[in-house]
Length: 165
Image (cartoon, rainbow, N blue to C red):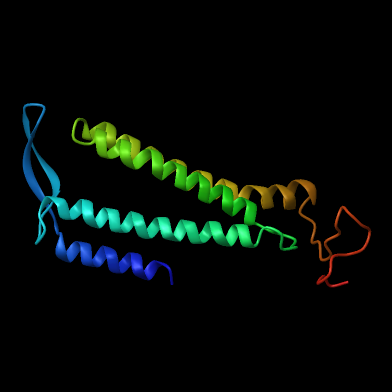
């Protein structure tokens, strides 16, 4: 449901500011460079990029609100802290990489491409590791892969409310 506005932004962006290939001189050679064309010309790409980043920031703020609101909910697999760490990681990465990319890209597109690619790979890998490694360790290292039906808290000898026992 939260993807629909992002898709609408992207579709409008492609209709209004169509990406085009333009011949530009880079390092004394002529190269095709992807630029913004369509109805808006060059500034349209930056405007729609800002709109998309703004919407993504709102989604991240909503995720931070949800992780803070659900941090004290008792549950066997309460992931609010992991989600919060992932959100902070992505927000910090966006705050650092986007300006650096926009500054480096006109001077050396290859280094800008390397920075963007490394940032995407890091964000994807860190989020997956933060979300799936703790439950994996809990299930396979601590519980040894047993089929545990009743979760016993370390604080008492009684089962947690809502369990099968």
